[in-house]
Amino acid sequence: MKRCTRIIANIVIIILSLSFIFLFPSASSDFYENEHNNENYICRSALTTGYGKSKIEYSDSTVLLTSELTITWRFNGSYTQYVAPMVCGIDYSVAEVEAYGGSAITFCSSIHNYKIGSSHVYFVGLIP
Image (cartoon, rainbow, N blue to C red; front, side, top):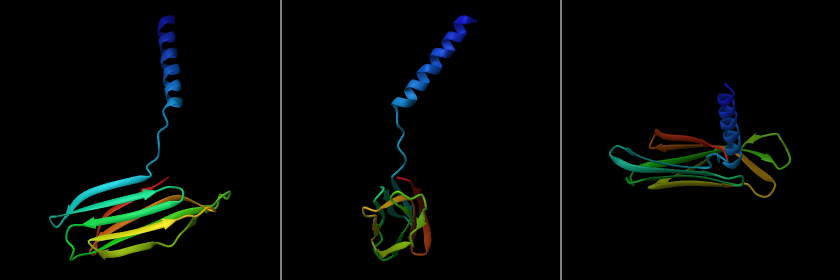
């Protein structure tokens, strides 16, 4: 019984030690590739505390693409969060939108929506 207790205690100590060594990062970028109407498309999303980007590429250049980005942000030193109005990039072949925070603003989270024509093809939320 003592031996079993000692083994369990050692396992717990090892697990706790390893949990402080490994830092698990949150997702701050995303890449997605798929097909729509037998044509390839790629969605790229990124968010840091001061920069956000949404980009969609589609191999059929005759279809209108939309890349939408909505960011939640706060002033440095404040706990109140604000939602910025959605920004859109609309174009053929490649649609892209970027947002910059500046020195007094910190980005907290983002929502990235992608459309090919009127069809929603991908959605992702990121935290820096």
